[in-house]
Length: 175
Image 1 (cartoon, rainbow, N blue to C red):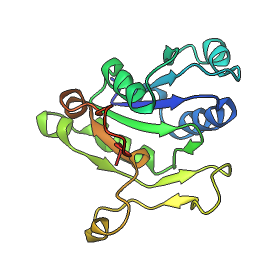
Image 2: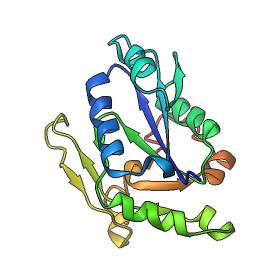
Image 3: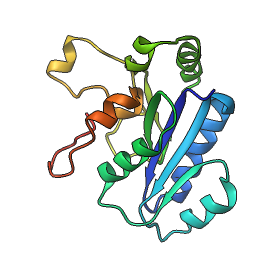
Image 4: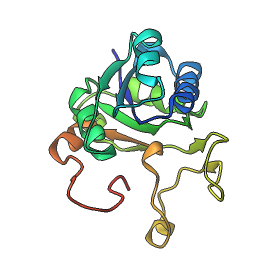
């Protein structure tokens, strides 16, 4: 039974998406992971590549109202207990397989509401000044610095179904 959905919202980033999917395939067991990709109407050939090369992925193709709308759509398509949002260019760390093994072994209501946090590694195409690695953290430093990035959080799907991303707020809603 699949335990985690990897949800990737993308727009005109086909090459970065390929790197992300390669890291998912390299580090996570296919039998435990579902891949959901929302392509918001790319013009770089990414949607065509997805249709041809990613037949097992759940695809949402076409225009959306932005990244948070795409994230809400992917949550609604999710068939697993947890979801991990990644961007094109985000890479799965090998240690993520260990966290996934914990999800595989846990059962019951508590396991489906637990939040799991891991580190985030970005590929070499990141903006200047953006670090390559964000370590997993959940400590008092979160009060004065950026919080844990969404790419490092395995969210319980039921929580996001009850409280979807609000599209009217003009803020970074995924923190």
